[in-house]
Amino acid sequence: MDISPSHEDARTEASRLPALYASLALLQQTDPQATAVATIEIYGTPRPPAGDPSGGAPIVVIEMTSSAGAIDDELIELSIDTPISAQITGADETDGTIPIWARIKTPDSSWWSDVSVTVEGSGGELEMPQTGTEDGSPVARLFNGATAMISSAVIRG
Image (cartoon, rainbow, N blue to C red):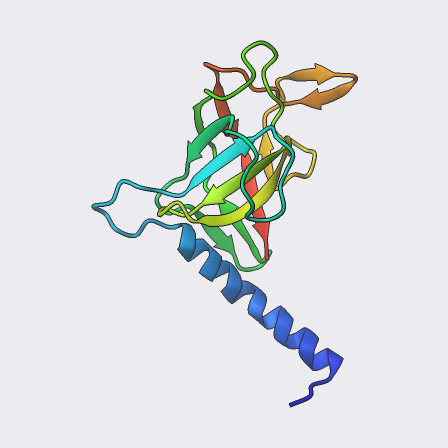
């Protein structure tokens, strides 16, 4: 079957919301007996091609809630349950590390996605609170022993 461009566009638009629900289902831990939940590994290394090895150890690994998040049907977006946080253990010992990207994994530790990480208000898919200013720009520099917090995590469909 050959379809018109407008027909193709309509089909693509109609699939956006079901695709988000399917994405969320992969992140959710539905077994009340299980302890494993989806995780967000935050890195300060250059972002690799999608799904490739990370190129280093994470700065911090943050566990998500068992429900993971919620879908906003009107905005067609998945909002990860926030705030979520964890203690930082993998930052540079002396200077700390500025996060660049994150890898989200399902409860069984499978790769789910790679996303950008920025300071709040800078448009990253994950946003972290500002910890300081460097060269006139706000940064979220992470130091071992401190707590890393994700204040916003939105995946658009």
